[in-house]
Length: 514
Ligand code: ATP
Image (cartoon, rainbow, N blue to C red; front, side, top):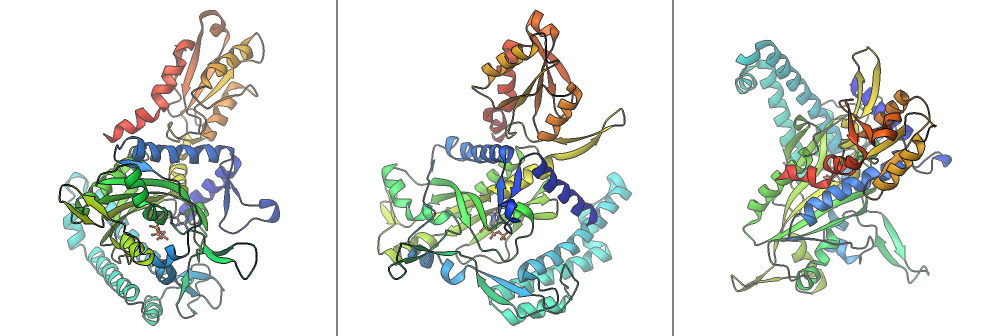
C-alpha cells in the first residue's frame, strides 16, 4: 500500500510540475475535488477526447455526434429516475468525522481480500513455473478457497442490502466485517443514509418566478430527449448511435482520489439504439470494441479487466465495467450498460410525446432498446497519465523520469532543438517549426545543454526530439530521437512531416482497432 501511495503522490506532483493539472483556484487554497487542466493537460485531454470521437463518430457510419446543453428541463430528471433514485448510501465515522460511501467501504474491503488471493496465485505461479495450473490452484488451495468464499458472501450480502435498500442491513454488514475508518481505524459509525447526488440551481432572475434546475449528472439524457430529432433529420436507420462528450456534475460524497472522482467532470458517452431483442448482441459487441479501444493505446493489456455488475441500476438489464489498474488498484474506468427501453419510455410517459421508430422491415413502430458506453474523460486522463509515468535506470547507472504517453495523445509531438544558440542553427530550427506547425503541435527549446533538454522533454511526455546541428546546414538532415528507446536517427528535413505523421497520427493508432 505504501508503494502505491508513493506512486500516486508522484503522479499528482508530476502532473502539477509539468503543467498538466492544477488544483482549482489554488490562490484561495483550492476547492475540494475540483481541478484545472494546465497548458499540457488541456492538450492531452483534447487529444483523448478526439481519439474517442474519431473512433466512435468518424469510424462508424451509423454513429453521429450531438452537443446538448448542460441545463435541461427539470422533468427530464424525474423521468430518468435521478430525482428519486440517484442516491449514494453514506456513512460517517463519529470519531474521525470523515464521511464515506458505505458501498465503497465494503468494496474496498473485498478488494483487499482479492489482492491477497492474487498475491498467492502470483507466488505459486513463480514457484511452479510452466507446470502451474492456475484453475486447479484456485479451486484447491485452502487459503484461496476460503478467501474466495468470503468474497462471494460479501458480494451476495452487498447486493441484497443495495437492492432492498436495507440501510440498517448495510450498517450491520460494515460492522460484521469489522471495517474501520480508513483514516483513523475507528469503528464508531453512524447509521447509513441516502444522499442525492444532483446539484440544484435556479434559472431566472426573481426568486419567486425562478425555476428549480439541476446540473446534469450524466450526458446521456441529452441524447435520449433528442433521439427523434436526430433520427428524423439524419434519416438514421436502426441500429445507430448518438455520441456526445461534455461536462457532468455530481455532488460526490467522497472525492479524494485526485481526478478519479470529481464533482465536475467530463463524460464521453454513446447511446446505441437497437431493435428490441437484439440488445445482448450489441452489448457484447460494444464490450469487446471498447476494450480493444483502450488496449490500442498500448498501456498494457494486463491493466484492464471486466467487472460484471451484481447490482443492476434501475434502468439496466445487463451492465459491466471496464476496470483499470490505477495507482490505487483496479477501479471502474468505463461502463457498458444495456439500458433497455427504460429511458425513452419514461420520457414518452412524462412528456406525452411519442419517441418511437418505424421499422420498415418489420412494418411496425416501437421504442428502441439502448446499449450505452460511458467513459469518464478525466478518469481516462488519469489512466493514461499514471501508467505512462516511469522512472528508469539507464545503462550508465543514471536515472531518468519519463512520461511515455502514447504518441497520438502527447500534447507536444516534437521539440526542435538547435545544438547551439549560434551559427544559424536557431534560424534553421525555427524554419523547421514554421513548416511542421501546420500539422503538429511542436515546440522550440534552446536553453541548457542538449542532454538536459532531452530529459526535460522526456519528463514532459514529448515523443520526439529533433536536433539541428552543423551538419544540418550542409546536407539538410537532422537527428530525430525517440523518447522511449532513446535511439537517434539521421533523417532528411524534408522527411520530418511524413515521419511524425506516421508515428503520431490517429490513423496509425486507430487502425490497430481493425
Ligand atoms: P462510480 O461507481 O465510480 O461512482 P458510476 O458507476 O457512478 O461510477 P457511471 O454513472 O457509469 O459511473 O458514469 C460513467 C463514467 O463516468 C464512469 O465509468 C467514470 O469513468 C465517469 N465518472 C463517473 N463519476 C465520476 C466522477 N465523480 N468523477 C470522474 N469521473 C466520473
